Length: 250
Ligand SMILES: [Zn+2]
Ligand SMILES: [Zn+2]
Image (cartoon, rainbow, N blue to C red; front, side):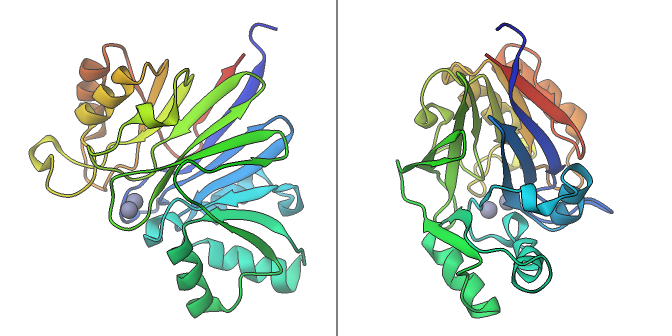
């Protein structure tokens, strides 16, 4: 079935650390095998999610990579919706254990509206038709990259990471990787994040077929990041922008 779309990723926000003017932080709508996941819920992503998924009841699950607020702040608004407005229980939600603590301090118990699973390194799970495999990255606090498989296609998401982790940890055969490219070249190694060249290098080493750079700190020269990432990857890379959709098929 060549050309069949099996996983589609829509960018809800691509700013790293804090939002660009009028922009949104990290977040993606992942659709495959009839299943829809909200992958990271940075500020602004809940508004953008509804552009692509007007019926919030069609959302099948949430993945939150780590406890930095540029990856989860908007889940607070979603909790309000499922508790009080469009009531719903048992929404599968995955995240590190410390983020559950943070959410419960701010907002009370996550259950029964969210069905929380605390992620650990190497853990696998299934939501609808999507297979998930988590890998702990090199970052401040427990942070989890995720591989998503459906219908013979695979995508990987680096979450936030430094060079002490590799996309190879998500296993072989990634059709597409969304990889953070937070830092300008001069800032390489200053904090546990990647430059565009480092993202290109880890993707090349992992044998990734397509690389999409994301998590750009506001002010980063995205065109230069794309050029440097492409040089390191050895092929043209793409860049995430709000509303962009990346599709892979089997
Ligand atoms: Zn971040
Ligand atoms: Zn972070």
